Image 1 (tube, helix red, strand yellow):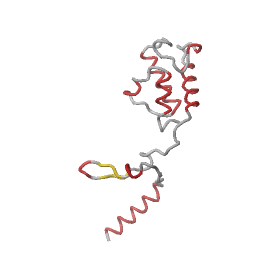
Image 2: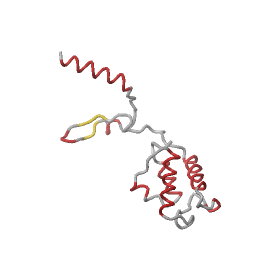
Image 3: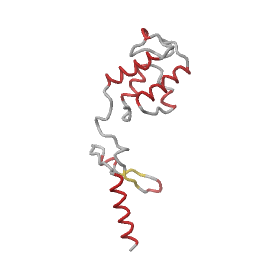
Image 4: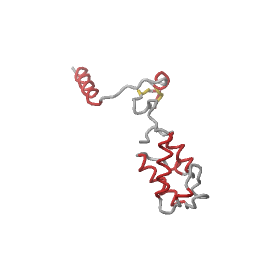
Length: 136
């Protein structure tokens, strides 16, 4: 009796969740990952990214440069793909933090502090955002 109730609940939950299965070359390697106590857990599509979900690099370049140019402390004539925030654009640490926050807002993503510290140029920001699967 208890087992039938659990199955019914399981079935109801699966219908409500609408989990989408993603086919990938990584399915065999990532389908079952080790977890605490030797137990294994199933990875869902949100954890395994489908190929082709990344933004086009040209769009990322254009949008990053526009965000940098929109900063009032930046001379738009000095902005290029290779421009360094400190050396070329003469921005201090707080100005760089503001830029990172603007990138997060523009691309609807959260950049961890460890990664944000590495973003010292337009090229670094472009590379990071273009390689981030959740950037929009």
